[in-house]
Amino acid sequence: MAANTELLVDPHPCRHIVYPYNDEEKAVNAVFLFAGSGLSKGESVVLIMADFHCQPITGRLATAGYNVLALQARGQLECLQAERMLSEIMPDGKLNPVLFKEGARRLISRARDSSPSGKVRVFGEMVSLLLARDKVEAAEELETLWNEIIDCQNVSLFCTYTLPHSQYSTLPKTLANLHSHDIGSQGAFAND
Image (cartoon, rainbow, N blue to C red; front, side, top):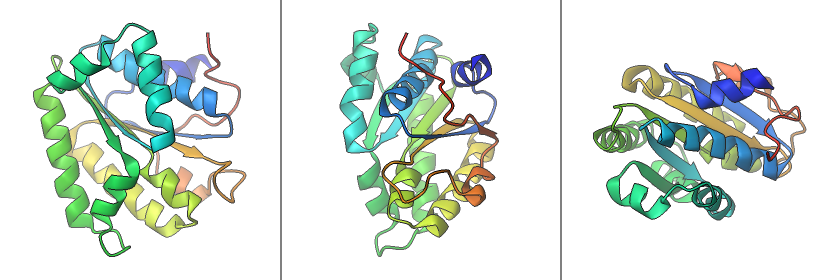
């Protein structure tokens, strides 16, 4: 549990962390830990969230004393809708690698320009939405593209997969293997 917490507090350099979960509160706590620790270190944080996670995560940041609106105005915190991003990179229902890479590079460049420390960390749920639709191959392709972005842009990425919203009881091995660290869903990240 301590190793999982430490990994989310300091995910650099270039880590690709996955957290398949069954408990929404623990997932929100994990994302809060990842985002809040980055913001407290002067890093920029990009949150690509499912709509149902936006308020719980930004609300948790606000409750902890982060001025979410000011951070967004400075560009140090960017909150994006995962569903909208998916529609932009999958205009015909199929993942377009060029659109994804161009969009990710612009997003990270903008975040890096607003980062006092020069570091950027990204949280993403697009792959979780794909898994919920049983589009494992598209999720694998997107994770592979993220690995390329992580390496060339020197960022860390934290992915969550909501298992209750899918037909899977565990994360498919093909997806788990595309991450540098799998922090699992064992009792970590309980609310303090």
